[in-house]
Image (cartoon, rainbow, N blue to C red; front, top):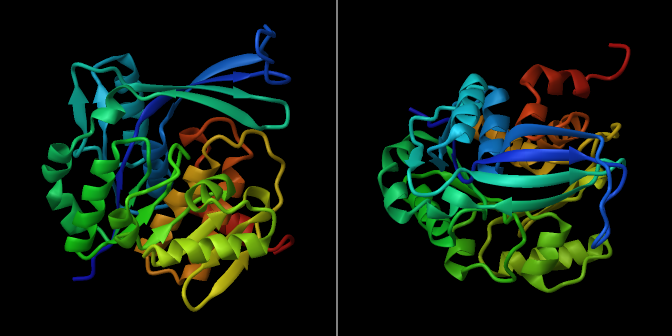
Length: 311
């Protein structure tokens, strides 16, 4: 029987979001416009994105034993994520992210990792049955790199694709072993610069940097470029996929929407061009709403955005 479904290994946070006219300068105090709390964390966001699009989606991560865990758990479960694989950490708090959003919809984020950085190799080993069930494994860099690497090995051992979202851009170098196990890597332009030491000013720069990642052993590179769309690079193909123009309210979680939707599409046997277009549409819808998980679209919303006006 053909495998389907998505396993997300990653972080979970409570996002504390302040809206303000502009970002404060060092030493400056400003008055904000609003404050809200949203379930977040790159791993949890991507799991919700995949689940809301209809894919069987499993999440492995660490929650603290606190009120944030209760709220996030309830929200993710309501969005359809299978949380049977999570761990509760009684020594460390649930991660939090402090997010400021300006009037352009741009954001600045400070993350306190908490229990996320305690997701261990032993935790991953305990969830091997989930690797056997799914077609796609998706991970990010808000958990220990050794845990990400073990997840990549288990994906390969169990015949699953491995998608690495190299975010946040905290390192200039990822282990060669990890890159060789990566089916798709999905950096944004900043992350691409950091991983390749190539300054990105143009599509030619993106092609050159993508080729460098391929030389490290990555099978496919998908560079996310926000409102400019995405660029795909493999040994035998390059492809630019345009983004859908939308009115931006909050860019928080846009990359997570893209990655969760990409994993969902690939798990459903979409061709790569179709999968990237699908992921672009999910990201476009997400930036028209506040929050991360709360902004993730459903499958029918993507179909509606795809449909030409007047039909």
